[in-house]
Amino acid sequence: MYADDTTVFCKDIFSLEKLLDLLSTFGNCNGLKLNVSKSEAMWLGKTANRKDMPFDVKWPRRPIYALGIAFSHNRNFCEIENFTSKINKLHKLFNIIMVTT
Image (tube, rainbow, N blue to C red; front, top):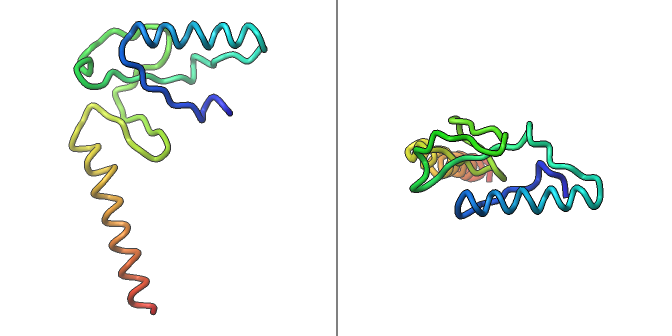
């Protein structure tokens, strides 16, 4: 597993703190360290409007992508990016297949 392959959803700030502590302990045991400067976090749900940026990770306002899924504070963007654009691509693919067969 590579660090850039890991996506985690935490319930609250306490859970994130515990996760980072656990990853730190893991790193102390085997020498593998979390690259905090490349790590990103995003407040979602009820906490989406929080302005604090704890734990020295990046807190971008732009969308974050994990396994091709966009996470964003902008619900309309997520709907278009995660559903509408993919459905349109499928329509185009099926139209091409139907024309060529």
